[in-house]
Length: 245
Image (cartoon, rainbow, N blue to C red; front, side):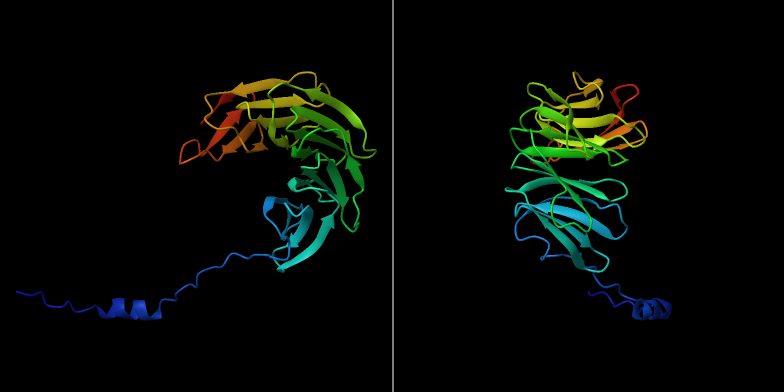
């Protein structure tokens, strides 16, 4: 015994026939930006643009709205791990496996400054809102505070097992920087006194934080984990030094 086919409602048919089918959106790609793996992206400080860095030793400024590469900077001797810009986009910094931090400026082909002092790969860089100072971190377990007007080292610290993975200058603060490490800790540093952390936040991390961001009194960290374990975001309150969720 079979089932009789149902008669479609005229209104449903009309809706189905006239409903616009949205085309699948394609994510824009910019193969001209790099010739090897891209290691990082960051806001350029201008609407419609981003910065990227790559194993091909370059830093690129991309206008994704117009679909073109605006500029590509060359100068590093090895792959570039991190790129970051000041909020106004005038100062761009990149950290590389060649152990240097380079300072780039819009409209200039060559690096304005090359900051030397780290002994191993520079894994993270943070720049202050005024674009006048920066903090870099390396696999050599050191942090360096830089004067971006002169390129001079303003301060340095070395902490055993503190292999730096990420840095973020806290918005609205002139001297406070959040830092993640392979030792599973999140540290807050006052760059004026780099002898020891201003605070250490720790919990039962499974995998170390690879990135961090700050908003108001909160710090957000992210880790990629492995096989669905440790793939997580953690929100911290720097007032209480506790994990929120």
